[in-house]
Length: 288
Image 1: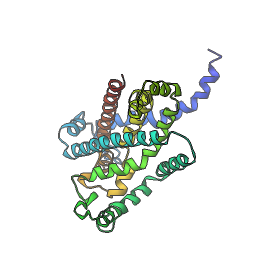
Image 2: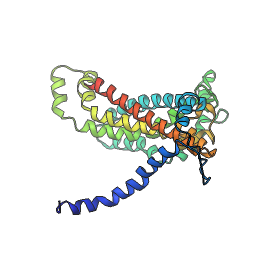
Image 3: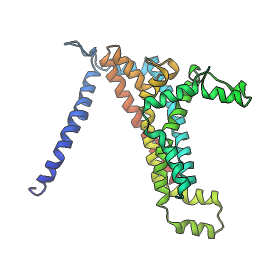
């Protein structure tokens, strides 16, 4: 035990920080979720599970935010994973050209969310934006859109911006996974007469399963945390079509309903845990 004491002492600062900045606030959040505290009053009343019950069953605003978040999540996970894998397959061979292209596709990742929001606000502007200008230039005027002004599809256009923002980052993870695949497997596949698609399907795709699991998990967390990007694109507070769980909780907190916001946060965490569990099960089924 004495020999392990110095090792425990090295871990102590990290444990103190983790306890002070994560565990303690989490416990306090659970406590406040059962109260009507407004965030600044010296006293508050216990309401039991009323806040959680209201969030789950009676809160249309929270339900709308959850629906928007799931739409956003689905588009981003599918689109970003597919695009990152495609880029990685095309750019896995290292030469001067692919090195520059990797850097180009990775560049958006180093930008701040606010910068990305300003870029895409210019792209999506219905009157002076780049997207509608390009459509007019090629004679596709009937495809012009209000983009963020369309309540039905606004969250999907934000998802496109999110994919552009982080696809390059996920591409790097896939390139690392592809570079770990032994060349002998591809040589054997070629000997058996496998084409490029068959090589991808039977060699590349199964062998990048760990990278895919990492990409999906990280992309899921990004999708639930796209708070600053959405506020940058939609303003504060965002309209109904762009309201997601993070912005809904923030709005509740800003309205001096800290107890109710804590209850929303608990449901938020449960939703993340459930989605992550289902993704892991689906990934094992696909690659198993």
